[in-house]
Each structure stands twice: as structure tokens, then as C-alpha cells.
Length: 240
Image (cartoon, rainbow, N blue to C red; front, side, top):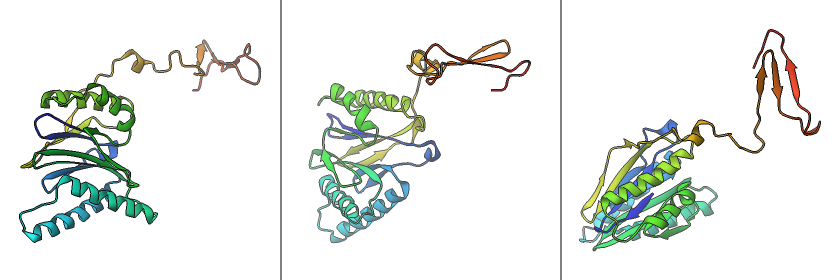
């Protein structure tokens, strides 16, 4: 997930999940730009290999020019769309950000080559739950501190709704001079909300099992009508 800020730089958060991959960093510098990816780690490594060759070839010209973030984004779009047409897609969604000639650039490309640029982008679950928050609260004059708070808020919302996520993230600061990527750090969370303590309260169709003495009472059976219930007498033994 990424947003552009008012000081000619882009700060990006990238969520790292599932828990089996909590030590894997999904954000890498590409020249003076930064690339983040969700999806398959092995395919991400393949994309990084492509980009290493692209940047090396560009540097070999030694003509004083270099590929900007827009050019790299267009290249990634062609790569993803080409693999999709071969029915062998790279299973990643990519976010690329950079600054060149004072112009900020932030773009996203999906595993089938769908791409766009915007002032804030996200991948995966973040497209559905985080971008509405960003649309409401992002503005042109967003400072770094406010940007951090906004993106941490988005990440917290995503964490609470994904059981396999971990609460670690990274920040990348991108300026015209280059990229600085922080070490992963843990997001502060709060799990004592009433809805988290007993999430099935008031849920329609939820099962309620009542144990009274040596009997276990189950909810009404759909085949026996709403007024019936099932009671199992275990005597002196109760196995659940």
C-alpha cells in the first residue's frame, strides 16, 4: 500500500503475510525507485531478476540518462501481460513508486497486466478495505507523520480482518536521490474489543449448546420443526 506526500517523496507500507512468511521482505529497491509485491515469493524473485537485467543494461549505456519510474512501470505491465497471454502468469500484484525530475510517480500492475497510477494504491485485500479510507482521508498536503498514521490505520483494519496476517510492516522513503527502506517493525494492536471477545453473539443461525447436569441440549433440528430440540443424556459421563 502506498501514498504520495507533499514533500516530493513517496512513502510506502507493505504488509507481509501469511505468518509462514513473516521474515520475508516484499519490498526492494529498483535503481532509484522502490518495488513492492504481494503474492508468490518465487515469482517476485523472478521479476527482480528481470529488473536487475533491465537496470544493468540501462546503466551500460552510460549516457547520463536513466529509466524513470514510469518506464519501469510500463515494462512491468508488458511483462505481466505477456506472461498472462502465455497462460503462465506471474502470481503477483506489484506497486512501483519513484521520483524523477521533481515528478512523483506511483503505479500498480496486477498479475494479468491491469495497471493504473494514482496518488494512493493498494493490492489484494487493501483494494477493498484500505482504499476507501485513503479516499476519505488522503489530501495533497499530507505530511510524513500524518501519512504514517493514515497508513498504519489502514494496516490495522486489514490485520483485524485477516487471520493469517502478521503485524509487521516496512516503510520506504523515495526521493529523487534514491530509496531508503526501513527494517520491519510491529504494528501496535488492540484485541479487547467486545466484538472480538464473543464474535457469535447475535449472529443469525449460530449454534448454541447448553449443558445442564448430565445432559447436553442442541439447537432445534430443521427437519423436526422450530419447537423441537435434541437432548442427549450422558449419565455420569459427558464427552464433547
